[in-house]
Image 1 (tube, rainbow, N blue to C red):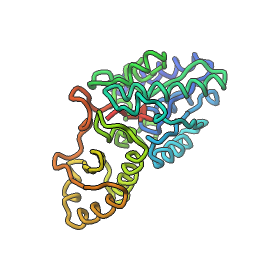
Image 2: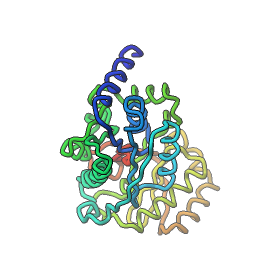
Image 3: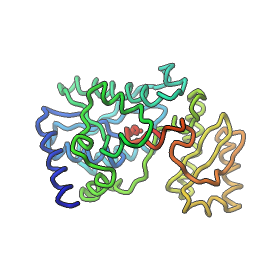
Length: 286
């Protein structure tokens, strides 16, 4: 795979070098970080990473994005907006991620125009289109966003290998989706729900869990952790602390999902993991 990956990365750099300048929709996840590194190689100071700040982006993710941009050596900008201003997003139907991505990428184009650039890039990779219901990809196509990883057939595994070659600290980072993905489809997205999910997940991160979600079922917290961390979650002391702290965060009830962490567990049956929020934000759409 080494020779093939070298050729793909070279082709992606060459394609980026043909642009006058690019704005990379940058979540700080592995996909967008590799695109940012490739863009920096190809265009130097004419490559800009941009992170969209909103209620659905955990503060820790913004901190990570800032840190990784420094690792890469790429200029990093942020823009602020609110998905909650869009009633279609708040309604949280099957196309929530489409509405979110359309708004976020629109902000990226605003930054690009201010810089005199025509190109916005994102971290969509070659594995993404085959992973179930991905409404966010429709926004990428409609807005004519350039996806160099997809265009040059870099799979998810190849992107992680590329991140490792660049010695990026996020090479092994688990996928992360925007906070709205914790709210079951059909239940309205509100600032209150996003806030208590963020507080709850910050606690799990502090307690040492690496792959997890806290799903918000209208006030009932359903904790999902990866199967290899389930023993830690079944500890009686953790159960007591989780109940106490998540109640303080605003939840009425706290439960542990014995199935463990599953992507898309509050989404339509046809939807699977999506988010880089790596969109990004995704961020990813799970």
